[in-house]
Amino acid sequence: MDEKEMIVLKNSDGTSSEVELITYLISEDNSNSYIVYSKGEKTGVDSDEVIYIARLVQDGDVFKTREIVDNVEWTSVLKLLKKIANA
Image (cartoon, rainbow, N blue to C red):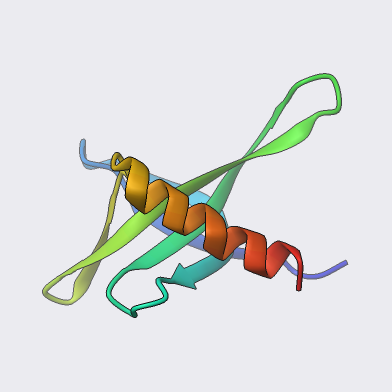
């Protein structure tokens, strides 16, 4: 089994949480980057792993995550995910 790559996300309240980096995505026009990660949570009868996706924004030498709220952006991110899922 592959070794999990763990990263630390600092929350807006100042606390930190360690999460598993699943992959990262770059938009087709190279204008946005996204992080796909897991907190180790399971859901449903099949115990599927819950994954999170957020846009990465560089603020000086720190990267911050931003929630994706725009439907057009979500559609674009889902297309990127489908490409790697079908690879």
